Length: 423
Image (cartoon, rainbow, N blue to C red):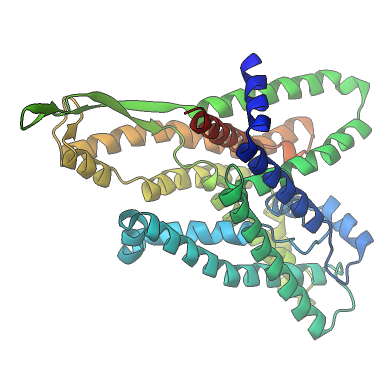
């Protein structure tokens, strides 16, 4: 605790660190103000009724940073940017030119890759914005709109999404931590007072044991998320001795840390996007007057988070995407090549192909644990709701994982800044 207060004191006494922290806080205030500005033409009573009965939009509201609950100008949140980043990383497998840019061109290649992601965000925001606005209009939440009003609303939500992406990049550049992650974090935390107040208003004395169990389980899950997020499998690496002139170089030993959860929260977001797609189509068709389309809509909407099939598919998709995303972002062959070029080897393993196969084998085993854990965290809110009847989206597994991951990353970034100042 003493160390914690010393760090706080150092942050506020160091001019540069204080400016960075204040800049992050200012940007988050701007973000919350933007989330309170609604788009034109909303029927507020119909909106509150619709959101109270729709878990689908409750999940989307998390990733919009709370902007969807009142249909703000940033109702799309950073969702389009996250989606474009995922698509670009997946394309590195299929397009060799992109793989070269991302892995081989260094910092310049990363900047070019980021620029492509930004450009892809615009059409994705247009598609998501059009679909979302059409669904809301079919539900009579957006009323008395002309063609000009529809185009205006679409331009507003696209611009809002791009503005939020820009704010996130400003936080990353001039603040501390990852800007996009901090925006999602702020959106989740902003929902906590509302959900806690709902739990208090519906509180019953007979439910005290249930709430105590809920709190104890939450603490254990947070501890589990921290352990798995920080867990590493060290692989020993030895550098061969080299003689240059009259001096000997190398000969040291170190280790290669392989994270248990290489993919982070990305597999959950990707699986959630696929599972929400049928529900989005169902909501889109719900306002149709055609009997066939209406029946299709009911079938798609029935594929909801309360069904066992949904939970099973959710777990399987998260499990598969964990392996898939790990394969995209981690290249054992390139790592083995770099070790060989630098005169390093894993004791007992031949350099080159054998090293690559060994690293792949270890990675597959530890990713199994990470994939099962992510799958459990993903379906945890569904299990809690079926057992207790408590529906708290901002306190659910995905939100919890995001919050803990962002806090851990932020602590590391702050420690790095403090260490740099000390040196």
